[in-house]
Amino acid sequence: MTKNEKLNVQLIAACFLVLIGVGLLIAGFCVAPVGIIHSSVLVAFGEISTFAGALFGVDYHYKKIGQ
Image (cartoon, rainbow, N blue to C red; front, side, top):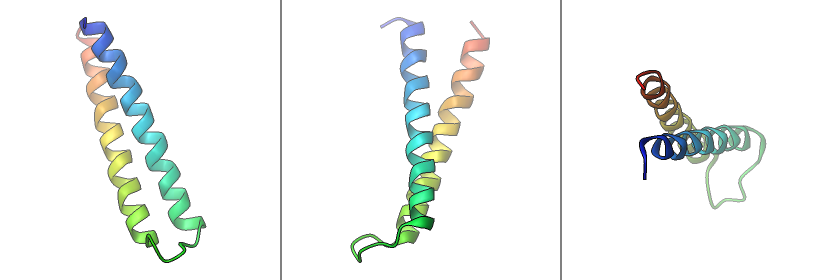
């Protein structure tokens, strides 16, 4: 796998994590849980996923500039 392919995979993972995280954040505030998963768990996981995606994105940005 070339360096450019690795950066593309990293960018896709970052976008996926951010979208999933934002979706879970919205779901945690809008959807009443049926008693299986508490909304605080959804919000916490959404924040973690969004943060991880942001870190991937920042790392991708600076690796791309360094090429």
